[in-house]
Length: 196
Image 1: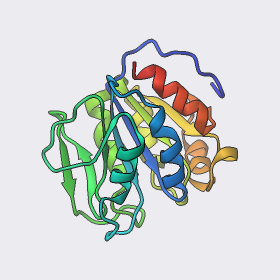
Image 2: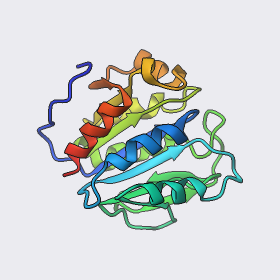
Image 3: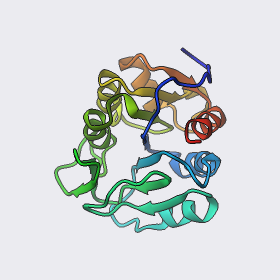
Image 4: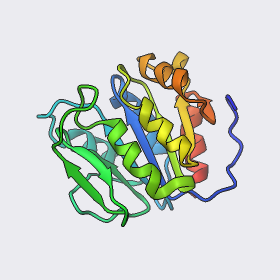
């Protein structure tokens, strides 16, 4: 269903979000739309250099009402918090809804990898998961979004026409029939309603 912002019937517990090139700007537009007292957790993989530090998490925390932090190993996932994958580490969801960090091999030349996060979260949250792919290059995120869809999660892709770099959203749309294709502003409004 393209362009629709109809509310969803199922309650959602978690959002997984993947973004690559153009992500700093996209996340800076999108995340401030989430309410401070959100009832949903957000896990994000932004492709970064291994030595990038925690600048992205600190920047987003400064401009958002919702709490934004860099993810830590063995940390429990709490609603109302945005977790950013640390540079140089894969971010995974464990069955007990805690986070784990891994330095396993790069996936699609990336660590953190969008696929690793999405594929670990999909069987844990199933139909209570929302998967979102935003602007970016490469194909990391395609198999992850497929896993979210196969486990009954809600799937959203940024309209490639509105993405700073359209290759990643286009690649996902070629492989997965997603639930929504939305411009960035519409994704923000959609998530704000879901999180209330």
